[in-house]
Length: 278
Image 1 (cartoon, helix red, strand yellow):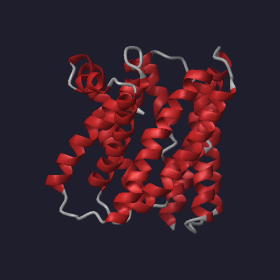
Image 2: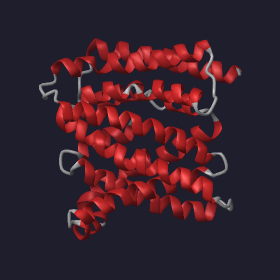
Image 3: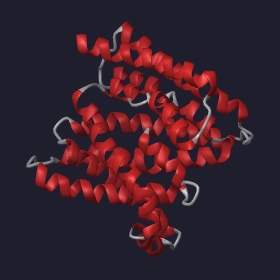
Image 4: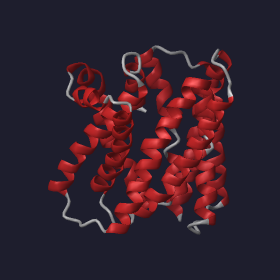
């Protein structure tokens, strides 16, 4: 949530693709260095493959589709559609990986999704962006890719340390945007962008907090719990984003924002409490 708020500020000067390229490239270099000194674990080829697929689908193509959807239908509509990720992850986690959620956990998943929708509903009503087919299709495909990414990162993290797992995901995500810029004949410009003072000034803090620390914690959750629980707890962004948006962006979430955040809290507690009991 902290990283998202600062990235929102950076989007006023840089394109989302540039921000994604910067955070993926710089964070993966930092985490590979940390992994070299902090971990002695060897990564097997199967885990490497799962994590690489996860990075390409989730941090590469999935993020690009997310930004495309925002450009066409606005951030609120996109966020609301993407709230389907935890539910779809739970469904595929059960049907493919054989992981079962209790009734309490399923209720928690539903409340987290509902809370996210309620929290974004005011911004949805105030949005003047058009609602076109390209944006909707991009958002739906993003949901599918992020869901598959959740399952593949779960598979890849079972025998991988969090620093290496996070670095591999970010590396493949960075390669996606690197190939994108190469095809656009702007790769040299974007390589210079990585070491520019303007990029460092606006993107260094959210990259370190939101991407380096956040990604390590994210992949750790997939290592030590199921994909559906990790995806659900990772979708509690409104709970933290609302107070931060008030303090930093001076936004006014209204009563729906606070109600939505409260519902998210209840849902997260149900998922987490029932998991701790099991």
